[in-house]
Structure formats: structure tokens, C-alpha cells
Length: 366
Ligand SMILES: Cc1cc2nc3c(=O)[nH]c(=O)nc-3n(C[C@H](O)[C@H](O)[C@H](O)COP(=O)(O)OP(=O)(O)OC[C@H]3O[C@@H](n4cnc5c(N)ncnc54)[C@H](O)[C@@H]3O)c2cc1C
Image 1 (spheres, helix red, strand yellow):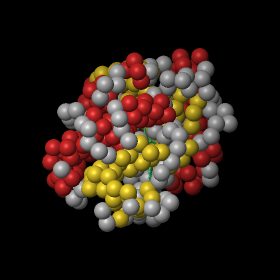
Image 2 (cartoon, rainbow, N blue to C red):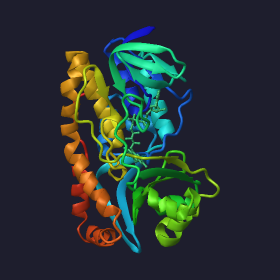
Image 3 (tube, protein in one colour):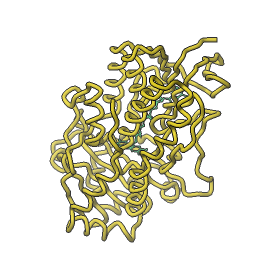
Image 4 (tube, rainbow, N blue to C red):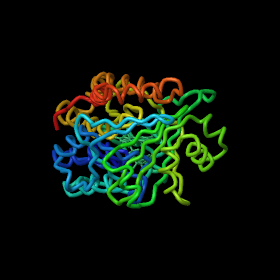
């Protein structure tokens, strides 16, 4: 059986940053990632100013990311709209680019990364891999993001509840689309869901939706759902004319609002495995990076057993942002609340800026 003091599972933002920081500290570790090639994870790709600050502290500056600058948020509900300056500029980038950058950065720092290796389940003191072999570890950093691991799965919402899924479609590059979206992250609000639209570094626009299952069931298929949303929401419909025959990516059962509040010895949950903030906050990547930085710092200073106290501490640190984002999501998905809310936002843009600030996570030392 292979052994390693620290085993990181998953090479998304959380896992890559954990590997980077352990490598920089000269601490022996191993990161395993199921995908042999970096894919384009389903994500809105919005980097908040907090995310950008965390990346800068890791030594990854805006220029290296090559992301599109985002200075405003535009809200749409029915025929109402409001455009508001963000408290600080953010950015937008494809996940393929961001994840590649972070993993390259970790590899250059000396991180030990093995790709094409999937973990199947946790064992007593380590992991069982897809090929049946096992790896033993003193400390396990679980960074499998949206995917759960047998033996350590997050609680899934009840089958009879109206669960949430993520959908993503790319809009083809076009000068007219560029002018339409410009330097804004757009949030299109509708009954039982919302869509974020933003331009990315390669000129395409990312249209990422969080919708309840019942909405998909009513439409019959993801493509029919997009057609239906386009017909009912004129501004979103205008953007979706650029979708062409593009593939629609999907991820099921997104447990928005979930936080791990208990700790277990030698077991650090990072990123989406620690807390799943509603995606309209655009703070999931910041949580992934910050949780990885905080966990590795704790591990290096106090050892693997310190995870017991660390995990609930992380949950407390993320509590405010998660609560505010949860309320914002409920309002955004309500056909009664969303239109007047957009009118209110147009009249008092300061309210949106306050909500944007309250949904950022606290700063952490790196
Ligand atoms: C619809 C939607 C839109 C979003 N938009 C935004 C946004 O605009 N801005 C933002 O900041 N956040 C956004 N988020 C949240 C963001 O995507 C996540 O918070 C972030 O990706 C979490 O990073 P992570 O490293 O924890 O997990 P992930 O990014 O999911 O990475 C997990 C990695 O682990 C690997 N893996 C999984 N299982 C295994 C296994 N068994 N063995 C080995 N490897 C494995 C995967 O291949 C993957 O590379 C959005 C989320 C959704 C659902």
C-alpha cells in the first residue's frame, strides 16, 4: 500500500491551492485528480474582488489570469432591469484557464500531482482508488468539489424536495454580444432559478444557470428549458440567440447552503466539500482558495489532528456570507419578490453593494 503524510483528493481550485502551499512549505504530500486533462468545470467563472486578492497573495496576478474585467452587475427580472457598479472590480475567466493556471503554479512549486487517478471511497486511514488499490495518509484533504466520495458524502437533499441543478451553455463570440454584456456580470432572475451571463477571456460568454428540478421537468429537456426561459425572459432570450447548437453541461443536486460544522481527526474538507454558497454570490472559488490556505496553515502549524477544531471554525467564518447569499437566492428565485427587488436596486444601488459586500468571505492570511 502506498503511504503519504498528506493526501489531497481533487485538483480544482481548492486542491490545487492546498498542493501549492504544502509544496512551498516543503511538506510531503500527494494530490490525485480523476481527470487526465483539465476540463472546463461547470461554473459561472466570475472572480470576485476577494478571489482576485487571494490569487494575488498566492502570486497569481490579474495579468497572468488574463481574465475579462467586470465592473458592474446587471439585474434583470421580467421587463425590469438595473445596472449597478460593484463595490470593487471583479473578473471573469473560463475554469479551464483558471484550473490550468493553478495546477501549473502548484507543479512549478514542486507539488506532487498524479492525474487520471480517481478516489472511490474513504477507508480507515486513507482512500480506496478506482483501480482497487489503497493509499494511506495521516491527513486527508477532501477537495472533490461537486462530487461526493463514498464514506464522506455530504447529505443529499430529500428525493421529494425540489432539488437544484446547474446548467451551462456557451454563447459564441460576436461583437454585438460583446457590446451587450460589456464589463457586466448579468443576473437574470426568474421563477425557481436564475442565470448568470458574463464574457470570458476567449471571447465567448458563459451562461450558467441554477434551476430547480421541477422547472426542468416541466420543460422536458435542458434545451427545451432554455427555449422556454428565452421566450419568457426577453433579455435572456436576446443573449441566448448566440447559443447555436452548443452543448449544455449539467450538474445535479447542488446542495446550496450546506456547511460542514463538525470536525474529524486528520480530515480537512475544502471548497465545496466544506461549504456550498449559492452561486449568485460568485464567491465559491474564494471559499475554495481560502479554505485550502487556512487548512494547510493549520495542518503545518498544529498537525493533522487540528482538523477537529478547524472545520467548525471555518464553518463559523463562512456563516454570514452563506446566510446573506441564501436570503438573496430565495428573493432572486421568487417571481413575486424579484421584480420589485430589481426596481428597488435601480433606485438604491447602495443596497446591492451592501449585499455584495456581505456575501464576501472574511480575509485570511496566506
Ligand atoms: C451553476 C454554478 C455556477 C457557479 N458560478 C460561480 C462563479 O461565477 N464564481 C464562483 O466563485 N463560484 C461559482 N460557483 C461555485 C464554484 O464552481 C465552486 O465553489 C468551486 O468550483 C469549488 O472548487 P473546488 O476546488 O472545491 O471543487 P471543483 O472545482 O468542483 O473541483 C473538484 C475537482 O476534484 C476532482 N474530483 C472529483 N471527484 C474526484 C475523485 N473521486 N477522485 C479524484 N478527483 C476527483 C474533479 O475532477 C475536479 O477537478 C458556481 C457553482 C455552480 C453550481
